Length: 224
Image (tube, rainbow, N blue to C red; front, side, top):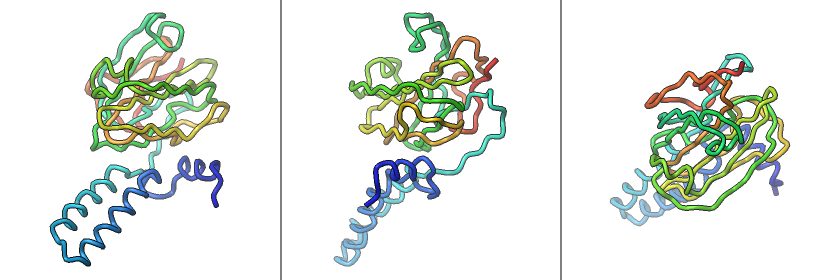
């Protein structure tokens, strides 16, 4: 039997085109499609087949490459930029003034999340909460979320996986103390969600509202 650390390693360094979190759903869908076909339940088989194909599409996990310098901050999630906001001490999870970039992931986006910058994980905290639609501002403060703090080049970056209206499971495959690389897979949120990233004020942010981004490829900003 595989150890838990081996399972996590396979998720982080996934060589499949499908996120391993999705394999049980896909397997069950295929099995029931075959059963319905054998029983001549063609309509049920067709409907379930379509749902299984969508599940495969949802859990897709394409390779991503970025040849930028180490002092770039990459998008941690696929999706659309909901907003770029300057924050003072009281509203920033950094404990100092900074910039918050919010990314909304629809059900049609890749949902595998990636590390935004090379460094060390200094903290991970899970917070239970509500399940408001992830594109609403109140989702940042009130929804179930998982907060990850990354140390990079003497600075702290905080990125937050936020569950949405449909998503009810946040997966995080890293732990405190891990040395990580920019673009490395670190987790997944199921079925429509959001990811907020808090950057120190001296990081030059180069994305804007409504821009589409890709995890591990699109540059969010530059470290000084």
